[in-house]
Image (tube, rainbow, N blue to C red; front, side):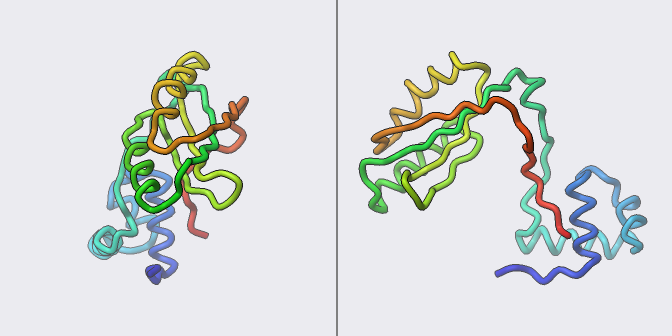
Length: 155
C-alpha cells in the first residue's frame, strides 16, 4: 500500500535522490525544517520501506563496462516451479543488470552489461543459455544510451 506523502516528504526525497550524502543540516535548510523533524521523517520513510537504501552510483563507462545487450528469453515451461527456478538462477548472474518478466511474445527481458561483444558472447553461451528452462533467446545490442536513469523523481 502506497504511503501518503506530503509536499515536505517529496522535497526531502527529491533532495536525497539528487544527493543521498547531503548533510542533514543542509537538507533541513533546503526543506525549511529543523534537523530533528527531517531526521524523523527520513527514519519513518526508511522504516516503512519507502527508502530501501543508499548506494554509490558507479560509471559503467569508467569501469570499462560499456557494452549493453537486451535479451528476450523464452522458457520451455512457465509453470510456477519453472519460473521460480529461473528467477533464482538469473538473480545470481552478476552481469545481469535488470530482469523483467514480460507479458507478451516472450517471457523475460534481461539487460546485460559487459566489456565488449566477446565477453557478451561468453556470458550468453555459458551463462544465460544454461539458466533453467531457457528455450530460446534473441539479443539486441544497444548502440548508444540516450536516456539511462534509474532515478525516480517525485513531482
